[in-house]
Image (tube, rainbow, N blue to C red):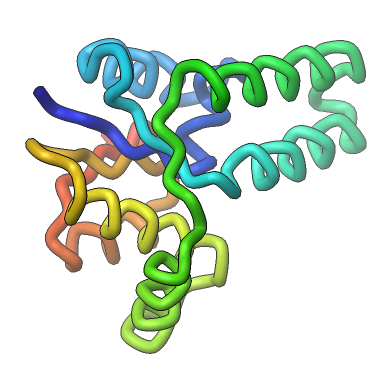
Length: 149
């Protein structure tokens, strides 16, 4: 059975309707129960993105609160959560040395690479950041960019 690893750009699409929402939802549905993975830092990164959109007027306060509660609930109940372990941090440092990545992007990629080593079967990195998708593909991951045509 295939699994998916959702970086925060993909995770948010499950909760806020935007380009690529349908593709992410289908990927998670096709993966099945317990086969969608997120990094433990993803809810924090999602909180930052949602609150920024709230401050900019793109999301109403009550909707932002609802989205954040749902992400926290799903992180506890639906997703497999990859801890930001020393293995993940070490891999992120290696990725930063190899590629022009921001720290959070390197952590997301590293989390997926660590999961790949531990999880049986295929794993797809789902991400809406074109540059990060290119790096992930270069690192040998199967990639789904939900906003790419």
